[in-house]
Each structure stands twice: as structure tokens, then as C-alpha cells.
Length: 119
Image (tube, rainbow, N blue to C red; front, side, top):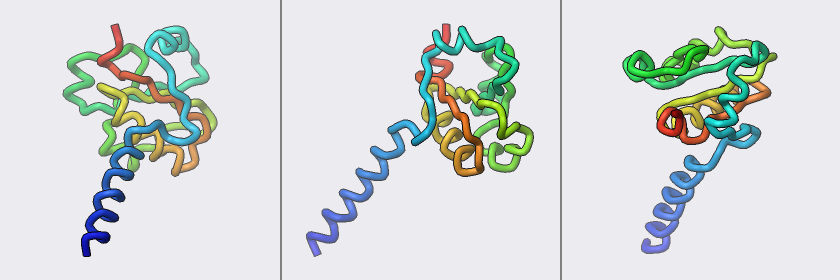
């Protein structure tokens, strides 16, 4: 019985740590690199924070699609263009990147540190 408990604890720890790592096939960029790319019309810029967070502070050119709406609203994005995703810290945008990859988006980029790193 004790072995099963260790197995369950190990599995929970593994799943938690796996969520912290970047999604496979998703490029990671800094906010400095983002500033260099902001005027690229061949890229789509998505902010997955809540509407209230977005309205409080945002980056011009980013479209707000909150993470909880992304699955239903992903058809508003082109699968042919790179999608650059940002959130507050980089956690939700990493999750959003994984979701979009599963939906067939090929070129995904996550902004490391999110809005917390933006100056």
C-alpha cells in the first residue's frame, strides 16, 4: 500500500513539473525580442489574460482572447501565421500555446515573463 502512495505522489510531482516547462514545439522569446517583432504584419499577437487585466494594461497590437475562451475562439486566428502569446507571467500563455498546437497551429511563440517582464 505504501508503494502505491509513493507512486501517486511521484505522478503528481511529475505532472506539476511538466506544466512548468515550455510546450514542445513552442519558441520562447524575451520581452526585448518581442519589441523587435511588434510591427511584423505576418504575426498574430494574442494576450490571454482576463479582460480586466488586459484593459488595465496592454501592449498595442495585441488582441485579447482570455485563456478560458481560447478553445472556442481559436477560429479567429490563422493557422498559417505565427501566433505570439502573452499573459501576466508566462504560465497561461504557455498553456495557451499547448492548446493551439493541439488544434493544428504550427508556429507558436510564448513571451517569457509575460507582462510582468514588459517595461
